[in-house]
Image (cartoon, rainbow, N blue to C red; front, top):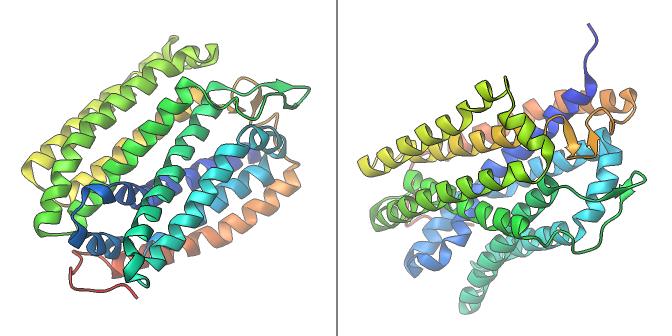
Length: 333
């Protein structure tokens, strides 16, 4: 039986992007919540993510590398279309990382580094949403290359996606704090999460209503028969998980909100897959049209098979070692 290498590469990209979104999403969201937190709680917030935050970009690198190695034509089209958002995102991640370290070593100017931590995280999260919206709405392709301008990504839909990603990350960050902290910080996180859950549902509805009208293919994949018998389950599952999240927040069950928020992310990702598959440049290129030579894909997949299990094991071990509530008196070194 012959393996469908382009499909395997596409699944690898999706897997890496999803893990990056959920694993880096909660610490980006936590940083965006910084201005709402009491000053004395901010060190505890940082300590809750300190053992795990800097390994999350691994998945971003894997996702980008998989697109380059597996679908070079798509990479050559999408990268010029996203130069500004991607550069801004990377600068935001770099500045955020610097601020994360310096805030503990420059107490006199710690408030400035806190602002840098927030700013870098907001920029990174917002630009990730911008990039998603730009890809979803389609980019102009002329003779197999990007034919648009530097700022074609600035549209109402991409701005909506940018704001929606920030809201979603904030919800994930609030649910992480519920699971990892105690006392008044946990109480604050519950209050934030209840409001953000409503905001996230509104964002999901807004993006979902707009998406089918971006390209004709999206409408067909969602609403034509018999596809609707399967795709119709997605909004029902979103509603069920969202109601479960509200119930767990009301019952103050510390562990459940974070996992239910992750489930919402997973369902949104499934919805994204329904809209886009089998395209990698929506409306222009499928994964098979843009695929690299099979030997290149097999070489890359060999590295994925060997290294990804190792990354998953040490990542899982780090979360296991630092499980449980954070001690407010513990320090980050």
